[in-house]
Image (tube, rainbow, N blue to C red):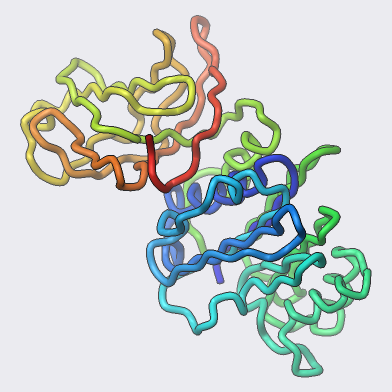
Length: 324
């Protein structure tokens, strides 16, 4: 498994979703295939959505799951052994255990490591203590773990074997009211990858703007010929218009790069950022002809600060199901 994440706080579901989606956009490797998303609902019951292909965007997540206070996910390449829930076990009113590498590998007693940690949580052990104990008994197991219990405590760690790898990343953000942890391996990306994913997630947990943000094409959107590449957005991160200096784009009727890497992002007449990822989409003679029932199409923006512009906050409408 390539990426695991867990979060607590208001909109923890949105934070976990944003982290996985950010990885699919910013990274290259075994991502965008299978995904397991889990929450503890208001009654403390475990709820799941899974997919073998297409990543987090293939999951139709209800709005109350997006707002859930306790959430976790795991994702990697496609077509993994069923049931997919084995990679992110949970127990009602106890907690969830995610991770990366092979978190379901049997321990010295033959019990899947993530299940062993979950059993410790059920006995009242704190997540960090449970993970430390499990990994100390199996230092050469190929696994990293993140556990969240029903009170919102989070613990995490890599085995000694995984800690020796040169391709691992981790990030953690926390406050009195929110906490997120992610672990990953074998993902290629420019810049501080794990920190960017944590940044995307933290904007939902903290309710404040961060340097790395998600923007979405949610509706049919015009493409205008211009002297420079620009993307216009509203306060909630919806892309409303695209300007392109590519002479062929406006007349194109094919799949094309509609938003170019590095394009300026403008909101309310101010430059607020630049496109950190591109948007490859079907174009139709000056339009992105998005169907109303299709999922929003995302890009990642990196905020900029200049003498005449400051990053502007926008509210979350991350759900990748139906739009209205």
